[in-house]
Image 1: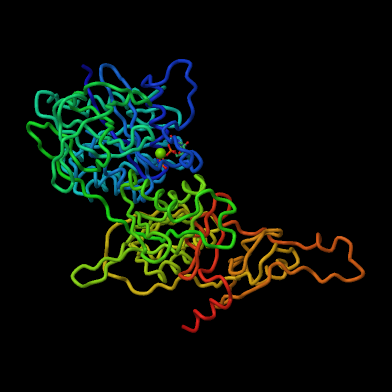
Image 2 (image 1 turned 180 degrees about the vertical axis):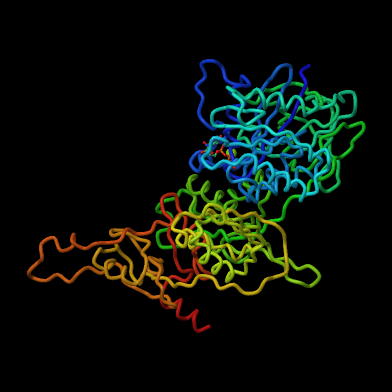
Length: 600
Ligand SMILES: Nc1nc2c(ncn2[C@@H]2O[C@H](COP(=O)(O)OP(=O)(O)OP(=O)(O)O)[C@@H](O)[C@H]2O)c(=O)[nH]1
Ligand SMILES: [Mg+2]
């Protein structure tokens, strides 16, 4: 039997986790000689590939010497923090990657604090030491300070450090050492992480820490065999979240080999497994021996902080683009999502045709929307709202830590805006003309800020934020300062009309685009919405000026991304999402409806 070591790779977004996993797999012999290797193989779904980010944590494994090392690649974006937290429950140690230039970031702190609390002893990997401006020694000091701040034990503080250029598959013990591969990292893992103790004689306990779904076998539970032996055809029970204990039977038992799942009949303690056959098994539950059932602690699942309404699309163009447009479609799809999307909550809206969907942040929910539109759904979505809590009769709201890096000259603009948004600066320093500021700011205050931030810093600023905690309500925050241009007409936009309108603000539509009454076609600096006619053609005169229309110069329309659109809309507006279009609209489409609403 090979010795088993389970590790998770954790870090702030983009610090190189998936890249490192790639090279660990290659050098750990996970690919056949002739196998074609795609880059970032672990980012396996379409959206992950397109956006270059990891959304779901995933398992793979390698063999090194006589060890089997299971690796869990985790997402770095704050919205997926609970994915990481759960991954930590199935591992024996973590590789904490830190970018040699950026140093620790909000999510570094989050994932490290969770690891330390679970008693894990991290291995610190200072990655991207090839980067211009890398400052590995300084970054180690910063990491050390972070360990102290997070109250690491002496043992945890004594962390080993490995330097790496993950992109080249290189690791070193010392910064100026020569190295051709990841051997120093493999050796450090073997030296510092004890293989999982063999307890195959004891009664079975398998802790469910992740879920996945497969059309053929249904829900799949993933986790570690914490104790005993998991044998497919023996009798076992499931200790459920509600305290009940039910007999269960597995239809499939698999382990992770390289990038694949391999079906097996039995598994020893310590191994990570995927089991199918238990339809509504969920996170935190324990599969355990029928003779001596013992549950492991239920995992706390993070409460959602942000909510949106997902409504049936009832705009005039509904059904032109999408295959699935009814409430029933919406309901089925969202319920399926609940199978695996652990941080998500679904509530009926009662009389309205739609659902209230809550999650861990804008990205969490917008990824779901993006997946749905690709699958052929049409949905209208309301303005994202934070979820308040009441504690001891006091209104509490989610607060985030934001770390902002900008060229020094833009500092003023950022400070002014964040002040208005109830941000409180907790730290500020300037190095080589670049200022780094740390803020504690309500989630509300950050909604819609990114677009402004990009403008205010001419695209040179970097803004990272992560949920920190609930705090007392900070008071009103003024939302969008601008108003919108609403189409008062149905038809195709005309260059002539748009040319006149662009003097009043920024347009979201190009010429020749079909619009409807109530659709938002642009933003204006005025305080009041304006109803406009974007379809108006120039009056035909008898003497036609040849080519006059072509001479019209239009500023290119702004194409809002899904996230930008969600951040932009106001309370009485919706984003209409279809497979090929993202449109903004007023909830009440006609001028009559809207003016009636204003009077009420
Ligand atoms: N210069 C340099 N770039 C690197 C190195 N390692 C990774 N990168 C680059 O950093 C970017 C992010 O890498 P990923 O591996 O996707 O980062 P990640 O930590 O998995 O990101 P998330 O999963 O989204 O949190 C990619 O463009 C990599 O090519 C390195 O050692 N040096
Ligand atoms: Mg990744």
